[in-house]
Length: 236
Ligand SMILES: NC(=O)c1ccc[n+]([C@@H]2O[C@H](COP(=O)([O-])OP(=O)(O)OC[C@H]3O[C@@H](n4cnc5c(N)ncnc54)[C@H](OP(=O)(O)O)[C@@H]3O)[C@@H](O)[C@H]2O)c1
Image 1 (tube, rainbow, N blue to C red):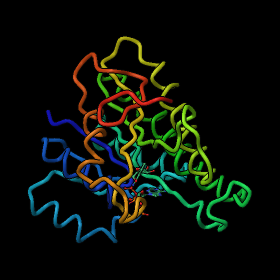
Image 2 (image 1 turned 90 degrees about the horizontal axis):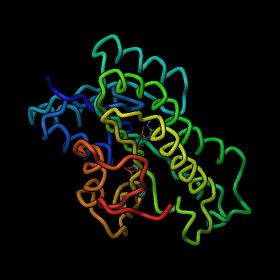
Image 3 (image 1 turned 120 degrees about the vertical axis):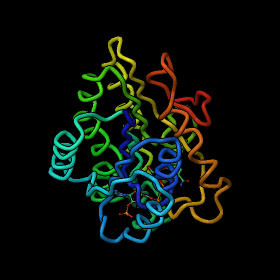
């Protein structure tokens, strides 16, 4: 039977490239996005290539949207093999002051947390049992070197805090694996030329997704509860 992969924020950037890469490897990809209607051209392009992709509505910052999304998956498919929590926002610059920690607004922290941390937490909480039931799953939380506590960090507080917390989400769910072939890991894609990374980033989208794909397709006995870039351990 075909493996099913759920990718959040699948309409552009790393999420879209991941969709294509997993579809190419024979997965059915449930493309979770806020506005499937606006992605029609992208979807047509993928379908023309013969990829098995299904657009689905999901706003990861809204609990009801997550609940409706998971209910639809349970009803239509009943299982999920791969979950990539890829959707994310970096909005600290909206507070001005070169994203100084002294300028960070409460709303920026809340919005960043809702999308980058709470969304992946709730989605994993609801999809993990479907994986446990099948005895197989790969969960990848797309994190960032900006989350590393072991490195010196400054500015963009909301983004950094939300991604550090996301790494804890990884650790907590990884500890729930009890003998099943399930791997839950955080992956940093590096600095990538997407809308978020900007044109000056040092990595292409293809380079950025490499380590995410690695974690999404780990063989049995692969690492669980780690933080990686390009398949190599990264300091927390
Ligand atoms: N690019 C980098 O240099 C870099 C570095 C480290 C980590 N990352 C991480 O990599 C992931 C992907 O980033 P990217 O570079 O591909 O960024 P991007 O091009 O800005 O894409 C972000 C994606 O997230 C989606 N999204 C945002 N809020 C959402 C919500 N509430 N519900 C559902 N989808 C939502 C966006 O959808 P809309 O089109 O609806 O806005 C879009 O599809 C993020 O988690 C990011 O933090 C990126």
